Amino acid sequence: DQQVKQNSPSLSVQEGRISILNCDYTNSMFDYFLWYKKYPAEGPTFLISISSIKDKNEDGRFTVFLNKSAKHLSLHIVPSQPGDSAVYFCAAGAGNNRKLIWGLGTSLAVNP
Amino acid sequence: DVKVTQSSRYLVKRTGEKVFLECVQDMDHENMFWYRQDPGLGLRLIYFSYDVKMKEKGDIPEGYSVSREKKERFSLILESASTNQTSMYLCASGAGRSNYGYTFGSGTRLTVV
Image 1 (cartoon, rainbow over the protein chains, first blue to last red):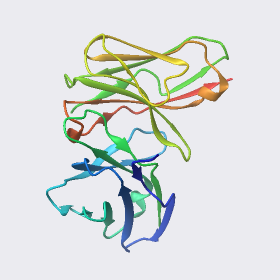
Image 2 (tube, chains in turn green, yellow):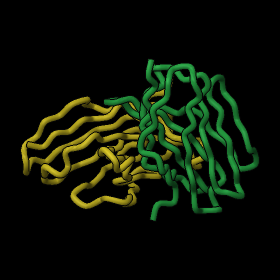
Image 3 (cartoon, rainbow over the protein chains, first blue to last red):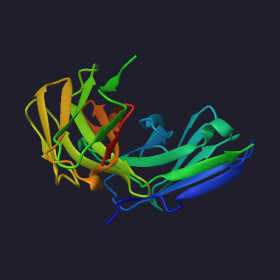
């Protein structure tokens, strides 16, 4: 059973608009969440993270929101750019566990 | 700049061959991981290691083995390659707790014919 779920396999957005990527989790022990971005034929790269003691973290055009009661987080990209077209993975970590648990990814297409 | 280096970007091997995928990190990280990525299946963990000579099975270890003789190097071995092992293979390293995140290599696109 998937502990981290990205229910939208794909998303298409116009350039300049907001992209919202969603992630749900089931394990209440998760205390840290990360978003990675992956281009084809490359390894994933770290984008932004959030600790469970916060409900928002912002870095430039990227903002992650965490709703612990709903076990839901979202990544907002404003404004979206064509170079943001990639697969976005949500990952979660718990306590002293060394392993991250990954969602299946959402493929974002930003159209010019 | 921290780096995880995978020895090959593209490989083509024949069914039944023994295949070695090498990964080296220069960050003195304790943890190293091997994943495969297939369309629609996300990142699936094959094996991981928390220390030299230590290994643990991930979610899909069948048909694979690993070796970690030195802290900086983690090798993935396909004992007898099969066509269903055609995939993108990704190596990652991390320090201590998973909260610190991972650094990934560029990936190896393996095709087994």
